[in-house]
Image 1: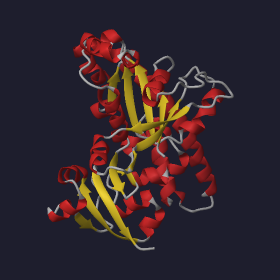
Image 2 (image 1 turned 90 degrees about the vertical axis):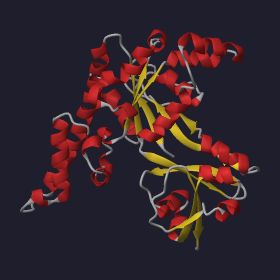
Image 3 (image 1 turned 180 degrees about the vertical axis):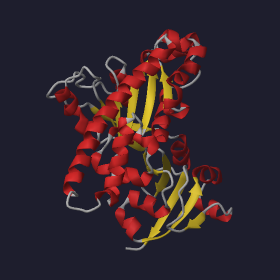
Image 4 (image 1 turned 45 degrees about the vertical axis):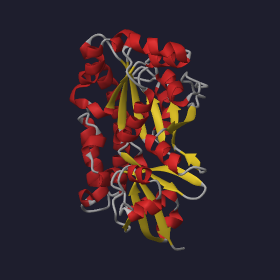
Length: 353
């Protein structure tokens, strides 16, 4: 299961965001030597899955689910032994969600992000430099250790980190895979959630421009402004009072479901669907995955015995109402193992064990 970690400076609203996304209260929020991170499952609702359930009735519906972890704030003043206490867990993440508090001063948000990002870079530098030193010792008998591919890669990584660069943006997928054993934090995809106060959110101009305060260091697609306390208050109101509350603060639609979509997008992953007589399920694979890789995500036996995949867009299947109608309309295609799966497709894997 995919792991998503909420991290950031202290007092930015991480634990309230954890509750908003998961519906659970974190058991422990203080960073101590015995700290164990709160974790909860979060279902990533998908309108396409709901629509498919409408025509494939009688089946158990299984949405895509991720594990959400809540980590206390840390920074340069946090004792090293406490930071090390949680690093092992954070490094297992598939996505880092950095939660920041918006500030009336435009430059402060960028400064807060830069300061926290520098902490991650320093932690990675210590890790990468240690690995590089160990490799140099291992290769000291070699005449030309610089010819070793991992030597070259680690030398580049150490240089990038010395310059404060983000490894996720600088390295290729192949290079990232080569460094997987180091679990470097800045290699991981990241989404920045900017926590707005009620007043800041009510100011449309401010909320529409707050992500731009982060500058070029964070793209618009990797930034999500959210009034965490406001959304929590809205969720607790009786249904008959919510419309007036939304109008008061200019809340035009749901705020949490789009964030869940942003979490998946930030990991550069797509969703596909499968069904049989008993179950309709959503799955996720990295963008660019092939049909046989998608089959392997379902079960390794499907990849091993892969013959072909029958593929149709979820929207087409919903509109046509059945696979038989889809075949008649020429919308159900047969694809081979190298077919690049597209987001929102329904895949029926044919295999032979």
